[in-house]
Image 1 (cartoon, rainbow, N blue to C red):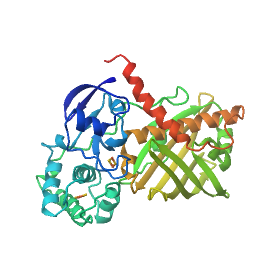
Image 2: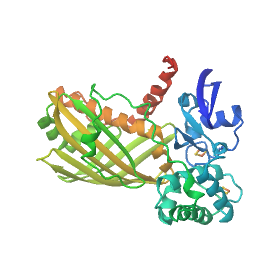
Image 3: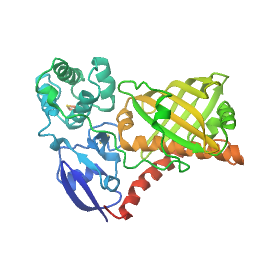
Amino acid sequence: MTAITLTVNGERVAAEVEPRTHLGDFLREQLRLTGTHLGCEHGVCGACTVLIDGQPARSCIAYAVACDGLDVRTIEGFEDDAAMAALRAAFSREHGLQCGFCTAGMLIAARDIVLRVPDADDRRIRVELSGNLCRCTGYLGIVKAVASVLADRRTGSPVATAAPAAAAPPARFTPAAPTAAAPAASASAAVLPQSRQGWTRFEESFVIAPPPAAVWAALAEFPTVAACLPGAELTEHDARAVKGRLHVKLGPMAAAFAGSAVIERDDATLTGSAKGAGGDTASRSRTRAELSYRLTPDAGGTRIAVVVEYDLQGPLAQFSRSGLAQELGRRLVAEFAANLTARLTDGTAPATPPALRAGRLFWQALWARLKLLFLPRA
Ligand code: FES
Ligand code: FES
């Protein structure tokens, strides 16, 4: 058993759990918070959705021990929340539920939409809810309920606009960059300043030893880039376009996104971008993504500022907004930087990316959290 301390619905909770216990079971069986429902227990249906550090997350694929020190909010923890009160009334009014099995997760996902995407139209609401499955309603009533709350907020309804601001993304577990380089948000922000509404965005900035000219030349070699990117598989390319697959494994969730991207590079400013789209047929998830980067000289090497924005639709959609996904993205960037450095300095980076490499990264990300168990508390 492992001792954990976390905050659940505003109250500190200390407990002992088996390392294999997922958060959903912990909430239901040890804390008796049975409003969190468990459907598939594979991260697909969204019934078990809760907030972890303010972000919607599936409690069936989050280990309880990984939530040590975090803030968890279940459907029972929204009694004083104006947005949730408005949604509950709207779901009832618009017939947004029948058996109610999906409703707790649906309401938490809906509240996230209301706070995060205030201009969402019906199509956007459906896209945002695509990670939550309902077997009863046909979604019509659910979409109408969310749309009516958004409309109230736009017209200044005092009830609907009294909701608290959306929580900021968790920042406690940002992994170290491959070198001791400090983040340089201003440099990366200059690359891709516009944030698309509803897209997930993360920025990274790190320094590697090779000079900018060598790094710039390497980034023009798409097979080299693919070989350094965990889980990437290049199937086709020319000077400005690539096709391939990205294999991702996150605990029980495995996906292979097949897609294509258009590449642009500016030799004068050492900036580049990739815009692409893809889909995973097994999970029926689709993604659109944009990546921009800028190279600048730094401490005898090269600082690479990267901005990634992506929009994930389908059963994996909700995962894209969890803190763990953000952390995984940062670790992918860190591993890419390490592989690129090795390739440019002594050619030791792997020639082809190992399959499901991101699965190992998932456990690294999880381990980064588990290690906190052994650190002295403030
Ligand atoms: S029970 Fe967690 S996603 Fe289905
Ligand atoms: S109301 Fe029954 S599953 Fe959604």
